[in-house]
Image (cartoon, rainbow over all chains, first blue to last red; front, side, top):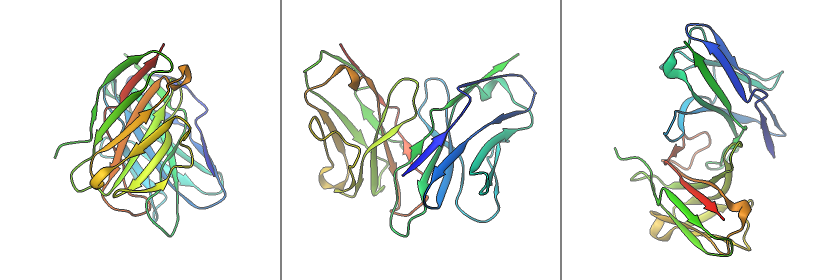
Length: 116
Length: 115
């Protein structure tokens, strides 16, 4: 079984400032790692994911996350945030199994609040 | 490409009543998931289908919840009878391939309030 911990339920940041949203996971097997975002009044959508290869993955809108196996972390960062980044961010994992697709285990989410 | 469709968007019922939610996944997507998201928490997987077969229903409260995916396309999730603690957003998601790490695409959800 896996678990995901997002320690910060809310992160207020000034516009154009950097931000880091923390995610730690626990699992007895290897996992794939995901960040999903939920903008106000919209459904969950994938921001980025780590499957293999380079431990640093990037999204098209300037976010990046780094997989750290020794610290079992997958923190999300952006060097300069915009008002439009205001949303709920969820970290999730799924088992790296040899079989088919697996359901996701989500953290509780972090509400990113951008202040002008 | 149309996204995952869900209906109704909102539902209010009294405890002990029954309710059903409908999901239409993205065309061609083989895998379908139902998640429950209680306020202040992340989504929790209830059931996963591969085509019309159940892959994982280990977290589905089977005494009151049931789900089916006839013909491997649309799916229905039912609660009978509902309890106060079932108040949540019910999310449907689908993915194209039955492969580890595949991206899941989520619908807008059905918000259920049990009074």
